Amino acid sequence: MSQAVATRRRPARGGNGHRAVVMPAKPRAVKPIASAPRATHRFLIDNVSIGIPGWVVDHASFRQWFYLPEFPEEGRVSFLNGEVIFDISYEQIFSHVRMKTEIGRVLANLAKRNLGGVYFGDGLLISHLGAEVSNNPDGVFVTNASFNDETVRLAEGAKQAYIELEGSPDMVLEVVSDSSVRKDCELLRVAYWKAGIREYWLVDARGDKLEFQILKHTSKGYSAIRSVGGWIKSAVFGEVFRLIATKNHLGHPDFELQIR
Image (cartoon, rainbow, N blue to C red; front, side):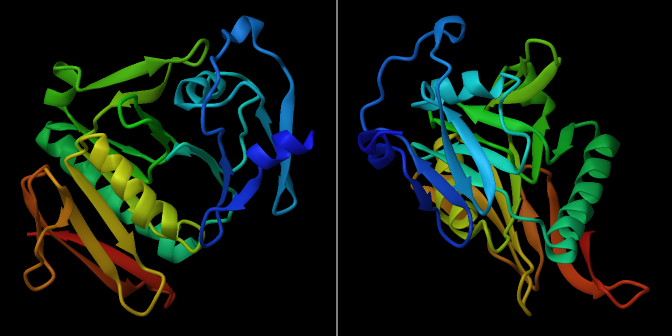
């Protein structure tokens, strides 16, 4: 790699563990995939070799890359704030995996019972063209109305059926980990707001104090809905929720999302 390219495409610490690869300030025109150059810039991130095609220079080309077989399978790869961001850290069993499992269980059952929409767990890429964001949240909820009026559209892959949601979901969930503090609390808070997502659920269970916020979309940014005795009203679900920390039968940390 030439020094000029290395300067423009350097691996940079994205804050608290994840890594960002900064895109050129003035993206060049992206060639169609069929004729795009196959040269790949490689970066060593926490002893993992990551390759980014030379033609991935903006959000549009990132989404083209996402549909190709060589898109990285390890970790999570996002496009935020003009950067390709890799998070290849392991998820903590209780404060992250168990947390998103519990919240997903309750919200998926609620959505199924009320027939008001569909809740998706992690593993789904959501993209918004206007906000220039593509990310894989810990959870996503889309109402039937948003599907029907095409506020959210199913994007179909070349050979893999539907693999992406495009547009403005009604709710997204992010559970903060050591590697995602800046991404979840700063970058995504701005990006999800620009994307018009009505509620951003932000949870941090890493410390002694469990933090649970439901952020509502306003004209000036996200604003935290007031908690009353730990209970928070969600306009999207039409329910009042409380998230509490408990212990399971083995004495390990556990969590319960309650509905009143």
